[in-house]
Length: 420
Image 1 (spheres, one colour):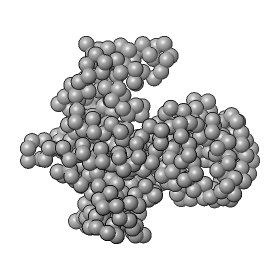
Image 2 (image 1 turned 45 degrees about the vertical axis):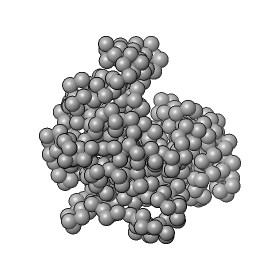
Image 3 (image 1 turned 180 degrees about the vertical axis):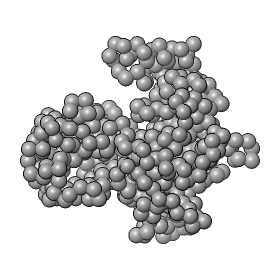
Image 4 (image 1 turned 120 degrees about the horizontal axis):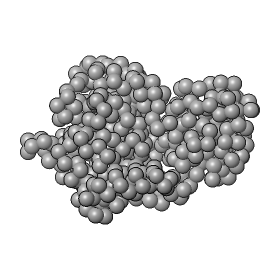
């Protein structure tokens, strides 16, 4: 009855135009049966993907790696990554034997307990949505407690944790897990990981990504695989080229995590495949929920890029330097609605100084906050209230010869996708 209610309420939500029908039904189902998530997970082979940045893209890549026929793989590809969204996704595909679920960082423990996953992918941890998510160290401790309770493989079907060895917070969380595969995926943001979670000492980072505490033995573990340029390198010396349509080093890092995670996941699902075959399957992914896509506004190209916190903005600035001309115009659109997080103090941790030399337009609900931050960064800019007008303003100005780059957080991104 609860599962039927999920589909009925979501269908009604869509029919009335009150939403996308991915959350309301899940909430109704969980009210009728609080154990519905565990019931719907049932005998499925489940993979969970969590972290502050990259969850949606990595989840999409892991679905591509599964390479299943229609109806055999279920995922919450709408980004509804809390239990109501998980229930909604699972209820809509009762026959899918494999589930790949993006999980909000705060709910990972619950999902681990209720879905008994075959694989858990841990990407990174940094500050995000300061009004909703606890301080990073508190979140790390919650992850650590949840992963310490995983059953080892010698007691039946176990869980393989695939963790980013270059993030000290992820390593501390994953260390108690019975089976961990460490991937050197890189970490562009270190400011939330300078204090050792083991002893309170200081963690020092080397240029090659290695790190260690200056007081105790806590250090980067030996890696099972790592990203080297465009290659995934395995501990046995094997190298596999990552040919990815998605731009940027951080997406190659996501692909590296997927290549390692897919091996135990597909083995558990009875469809074994090695890293080379998995990476081949990822090459066809060209955009993820509109991210990295080039759209047309006023007859001109605009590349849509999502950035939602200091780590994400820093990674996107790396992408701009890697893939666009130095003087290309940039539009920065920032909102502070419920889905974004109401606290925008994080803007002061974003290195906007890196936009120097580019024409910049600030827009969105918090355009004035962005404008003040850009002024202190000594980046000349314009402020335009309407986001679409901001794009047209940038396209009509200098630096728009080959189009412009649009950087936006969650709701600002969705607003622009709908209005272009």
